[in-house]
Amino acid sequence: MTKGELASLNFSTGMNCAQAVLLAFSEEIGLSKETLLKLSLPFGGGMGRLRLTCGAVTGMVMAYGLIKGIGTTPTHDEKMDNYKGVVYLTDEFKKLNRGTIICAELLGLKEPEGTYVPEERTEEYYKKRPCGELCSIAAEILDKYLKEN
Image (cartoon, rainbow, N blue to C red; front, side):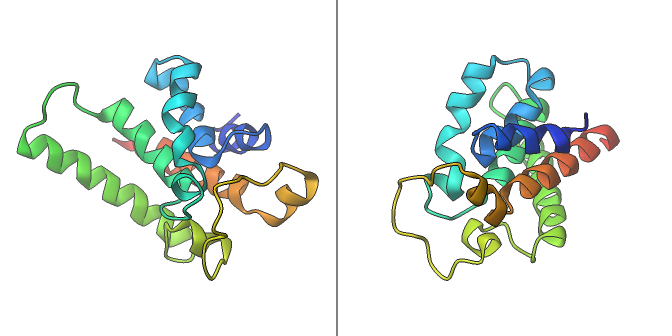
């Protein structure tokens, strides 16, 4: 199973977008599933359903940081190298998704729904949301980047 397929499957089991992508890289990260789920929970729905940065993107960036990050206070050059990776990953995501990483724009919303209450996960929910595919795309971008770098 590819990382993209795993991320999409994770989403279809009820994880939010950030959780779905982050958990697809749990083996590489080496932290418990529980820790990763807790860490990424607030980032679903573009951060608590604020519809800001897409949860799939934040999950991708968190996984990247946990895999390629520095475990001490980074030097200027280490920060710069890490940020360069983040810019690359988000640019690749934008190329494949309407030129944006903003949740509301990816969902075609004119404005956020104005509630922190998540929608129930029903068959209809999954039909109208591109989130499973966005999770797949984010995970595949990161997987490719990690293999090449």
